[in-house]
Image (cartoon, rainbow, N blue to C red):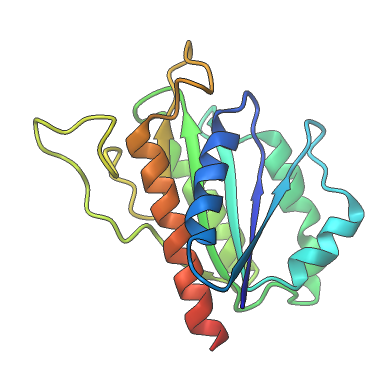
Length: 191
């Protein structure tokens, strides 16, 4: 059994939809238990939820990209993670991440780099997408890894799109494949 946690903040519902795709992918691997940890609008997780994180095999981080980085609510969570950091509670756990913004680029990699740094400070093992980009003329938003995220799953949700409209199929499939890959790695390390 591998236990996966998805810690994320979603401002408008688009990143929550992406988190659900990551969840589906991780849960598709037999013997995997997946739990969502949604950070609230005040940037908080209930105190009891923190204890659950220490018992996981993998923690996947997610946040929309706002102004070139993760939402302040996620940053508040990251700052509060200094308590488990102090006792190396997340050491050697698998880690990965995903983000979403309205623009095609939107400096999404800055958010993924933030997650990577957070994971490395916790001595976690980072896992990227492992996906080739869909970068030919005939590729578009319905193709897997159209945004060419290697370090994490990237999604585009146009500013005027509802969560029912975006992220689009290719970005959601990319997120699902990331969740699956992280679950597979968690099983390898737990063996």
